[in-house]
Image (cartoon, rainbow, N blue to C red; front, side):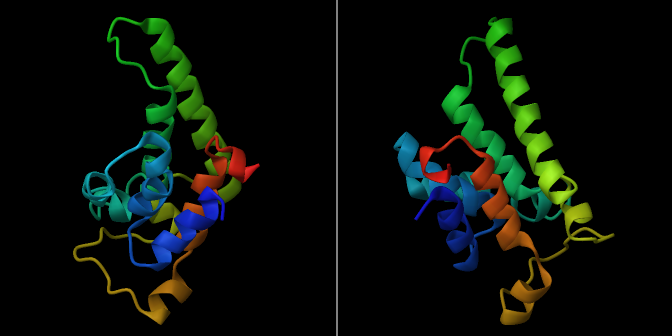
Length: 145
């Protein structure tokens, strides 16, 4: 199973979009899965229910940072390269899905005051499982190619 399929499966297990994507890549970076799940938990529903940047996109950016990020705050060149990768990935996601903004992707007008229960009806009305698949597929991973 490739990373995109893992991300989709993670979402269907009940993890939020950010958790689903980041968890699929956790082993690649020898990351503690509990720490990954906690860190990504606040990015669900477009950043804690604000319906801003899609959680799958946020996690996509985190994975790119883990793989290509910089540590030297004075390295302008490294920052420039990373930002180019982020913008490229965002462009691909937007081209494939129409937006990187949760409320636009879900065609919603309001924030998420409380998380919805995961039911069969929930999965039928939300494209999130496809969005996490899309985000993970965009990420650099030999299994996805």
